[in-house]
Image (cartoon, one colour):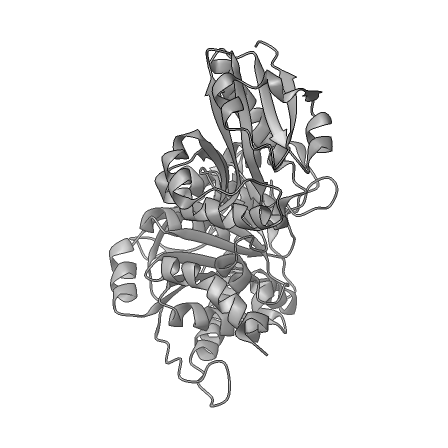
Amino acid sequence: MSTHDDPFVSWFRQASPYIHAHRGSTMVLAFGGEAVSDSTFASLIHDIALLHGLGIRLVLVHGTRPQIEERLQLRGAEMQVVNGMRVTDEDALRCVMEAAGTVRVEIEARLSMGLANSPMAGARIEVASGNFVTARPMGVIDGVDYRHTGEVRRINTTAIRNRLDSGAMVLISPLGYSPTGEVFNLNAADVAAETAVALQADKLIFLTDQKLTDSRGRLISSLMPSEAEQLLARRRKLGEQLQRVLRNAIHASRNGVSRTHVLPRRQDGVLLRELFTRDGSGTLVSAERWETIRQASVDDVAGILELISPLEEEGVLVRRSRERIETEIDHFTVIERDGTIIGCAALYAFPDEGTAEFACLAIHPDYRNGGRGDQLLEHLEAQARRLGLHSLFVLTTRTAHWFRERGFQPTDVKQLPGHRRDLYNWQRNSRMFLKPLQTA
């Protein structure tokens, strides 16, 4: 088998840009107590250890809900919930502290494993825990005293960074401490978000029980903070966990954390897929567009060449040299998805004739069913209108139907602008299609 046919070799090579990009970055990873109790937790620990081994600075924030509820049941008690928030009385607080201690020790024990012939062999991970979170009481809200339920007041970023700088992985429990020695029960998602904001982490990652899906049940791959707000406003069926996670993702995105990932924890290897593949496995919440249409630059030449070369080989596109693309780069518009060029098109204006050529349309094979060709066409039509042009034309040998479906009509190549007519390749015998542009 050649290396080209070996899926492991191929995947590893494709992952290499992400490995380089993530090395030395700081990520906050939050997961609930449900994940700790799950049979798949060992695999998650192995993946966390791998991330650490690849040079990622990790802060883990764990939850404890099922462990707390188990202890409350054994005592014949329960935690009162008011307006979605838990009231932590003295009995509940004892259960909270016991659960946090037990879960913390279990995670530390698993991260300390190093058996030969196992994924943890040679890991030698140092785990640092401590009183990194200062909290204050939630207080009395609408007449309800939330007792020992608290909220984050401050994160000791200096102490956390010192541990990370020493090569340790930091583990934070959902407990907060006050200057007067009180202990408060905190929400793990809130702690994770506030920690990520305080550290200005490169990524905040939530592992959740549910996927974030649209009305048709399809995974939502990315959201702007404003879109996440709209989703919260109209989707009453979102579970409590997802609602809280989304609110924290919005908060983090608007306070300096460039990327928050919401991942389905039950999917094996979800962390590795999200961090080391282009499309990932979950939902990205970011104030920056993960996929954007923008003006091309010289740095995009290699990506454009890689994109159009297969179409040139098939005869769909006219061959263009690197030098030609570099010279004409200002005419190109690209679609960039997570650092990769997945679409391009060019616009060549002929202002004296009031028209422009739409050329070199190419979309990566993996993304040809997402309407991206239409997006590029609409983008360049708008650009042509801004230039005061009244029509758009295209020369094609293989994609006539696609253009006709979008309002282009066949016309004689004699209608080409004079300069463009001089360059027409009669051997290729491309057909010309023209589309009038409606004024805005």
